Length: 166
Image 1 (cartoon, one colour):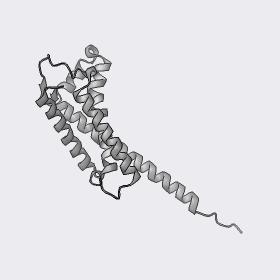
Image 2: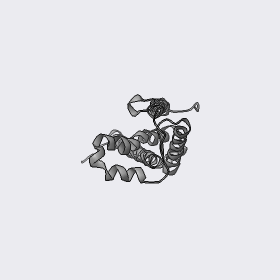
Image 3: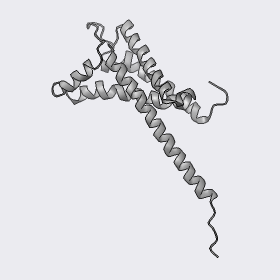
Image 4: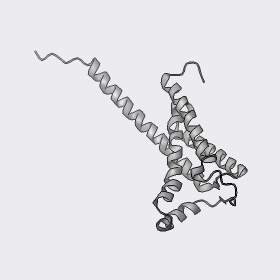
């Protein structure tokens, strides 16, 4: 870390590292997601939108919880990535850097799943995770916009004196 980081950046680093640890746990070690089951055959998907369309097509059969875990869960899982990255890195204040890094990080994790045969390698997960990073970046921008608006409003209230009406 750079010496002249702000308190917000330092807190961002702490939260980002905690998030990455949680993400690694759920992707590689969580029993609730079947990550410790080594007896099953390894599955992978290299066709974009194959699994996504299957979850929409068979929604009534698969049910709401499975749909949420696989579709919404992959987006939500990478939203903090897109949110915290611009907090800790100046380069990531540009959306394309954050989204590209989100894709790259997702590709690394998916490839590790392929090599270790834990979970499953899925290009749809790459797409959804990248979408999650973009969504997280959008949330970051929204929070920044609201924060700056609030600061301007407070600044105006504190430093604007009422004009005399004599």
